Image (tube, rainbow, N blue to C red; front, side, top):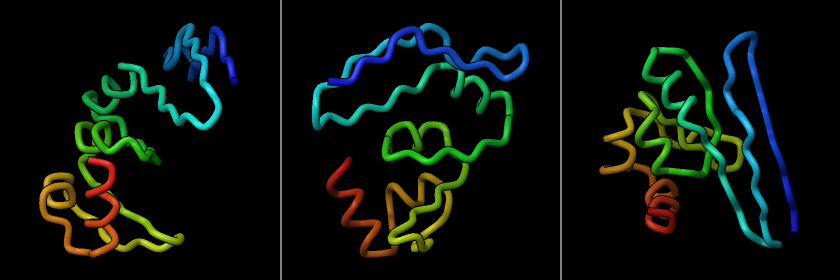
Length: 98
């Protein structure tokens, strides 16, 4: 079991994470995304985010790059990637996680 308590992260005066606590059992995967990341995206801040959380990526991204084995296999607008992927590897991955 992994426990993280009172996690905080700031960039200058901008508080990105505040008092995040989480407990994870063995073999569980978690993703902690605070609303502040969505706020930053809405304000137009340029960010590069690497995630397996496809719902979050679809909601926040204005461009999606799908990689496999360290190579870009598909890139485009979220709507195109999530609704009509062209690459078979992208299709296979999305069919398992969405």
